Length: 169
Image 1 (cartoon, one colour):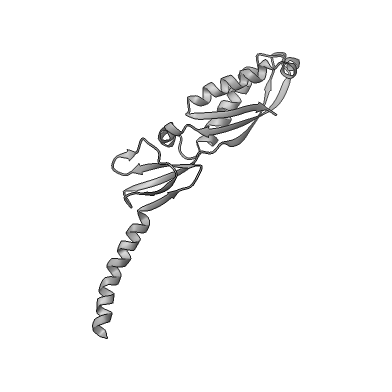
Image 2: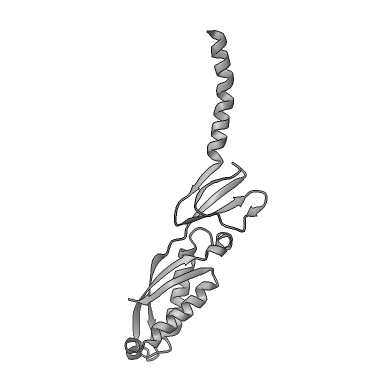
C-alpha cells in the first residue's frame, strides 16, 4: 500500500505541472475580438490573431484582446460660430480599430485607444468646421455635416481608427 502511494505521489507533481503548463499555454479569442501577441523577447507581433483557440508560450508571450466590433461614441462640445454665436453640438461616431494596424494601435495608443484619440480629434474637427459657418447656416446647410464627416474620417485614419458613421445629434 505504501509503495502505491509513493508512486502516486511521484506522478502527481509532474502531472500537475504539465496540466498547469498546458492551461497557461492556451487562450481563446471570442467572436468580434482579435488578439495582439506581446513576446518578451521579440516584442509585439505584427499580425493580430483571429477568433478561435490558440497556443502561446507561457510567461514568454501574452495575448492582449481587442474588441474590434463597431462601437458608438458621443462627443459633445461648445464652440463659437463664424458670427460669434455660441453653439453646442454633439457628434455621434461609430468607430472600430483598423484590423491590419492593431499591433501599431497597441504600441502607440494602448488598450484605450478610443478614449485617448476620439474626444480630442472630434473637438478639434468640430471647432474648426463650425467656425467657418454662421449659426443659421449650421442648421440649414448639409455641407456642414459632410465636411465634419470628411475631416473626422481623415484625422482618425492617422490614428488607425476607421469610422463607420458620423452624425450630428
